[in-house]
Amino acid sequence: MMRTYSHNPKNLFMKHVKAFFTHYYSLFVLSFFVLAVFSFFFIDKLVFNWSFHLLATYHQIFKFLSNAISPPLLLSVCMITFLAIRFFKINPILIRPLFEILTAQTFSVIITYLSKVLIGRTRPHLFHKEGIFGFYGFHFDHYYHSFPSGHTIAAFTLSTSLSLLYPSYRPLFYSIASLLSLCRVFMGSHYLSDMLGSSIIGITIAIMIHLTLKHIVDYRRE
Image (cartoon, rainbow, N blue to C red; front, side, top):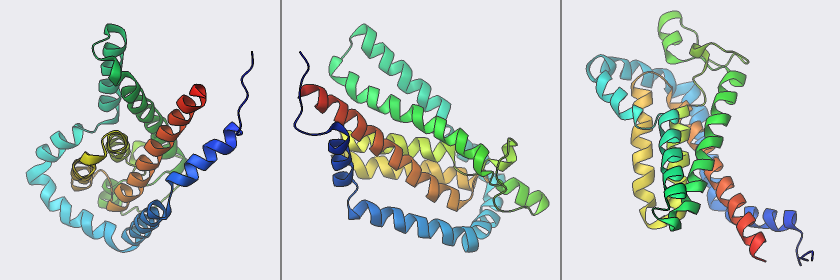
């Protein structure tokens, strides 16, 4: 027997999305976007020149810390943890949260690498060696993959997913994500504007995955 619903699924989902993306989120996105644009024109080169002097001394520390938010590493850890709990039934209550985190991380990796190729922003290394700065469009060269920052997107996707599941720890999650993402800037792998823009992408991915899965679960329960 086919079930009937009082609301159109698509309209109900859009209602949930609009309810979540309040003016607070819009203000956050607008603020970070303005900061990213301002940083691109006025701050990126200054921060890179300043951090370049730190790189020689603290390179290994920055590299070690930034490796903690490596997209392949985070995705692998999420996948292994989810599969272990799913098939060995270690703690069934964690299956749904871990599935949400895994899904968000998977989408973040896909979106990151597609965006890198399509956008083609030069990395700080090219600015240092050849004075090349800016966006050059479609490019497969690693040196043209500065934006978005995969590490930053992975970090903020994970921190947002965890914040949605455990709101009381939100300041801690975002603080860790911010500090580790800054290591990518201090390493000279990305500009400050890359980090600011990528954080918006990571947060948005996690929220959209959360709302989508929540909608699917609620829809099936009706």
